[in-house]
Image (tube, rainbow, N blue to C red):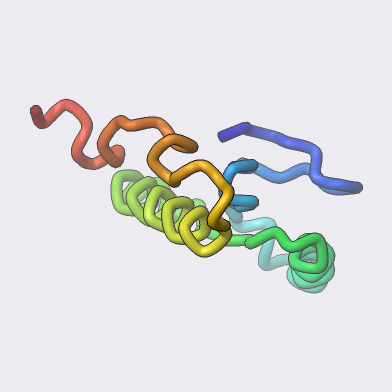
Length: 107
């Protein structure tokens, strides 16, 4: 997972290359002016590159960081499974073997 990763002409908040997943955390500014239209064009460009884009409001990240982290984890796993080919390494060999964020430290 990389933070502030260049994706073509754009900068993604976070990017998981193994899942081809772009994660955006949208603050209040994403609702102002032409920003919503810019986000739609940006997402369409990324999806044309066969990337998946998920957006979370910053307020949700602050209110429930564990829930958001678990959602991102689940999305990464699902996307990696969907994209797996018979000759590709297994999902478990392509990701870290640690538990999802909400379960870390419960052992």
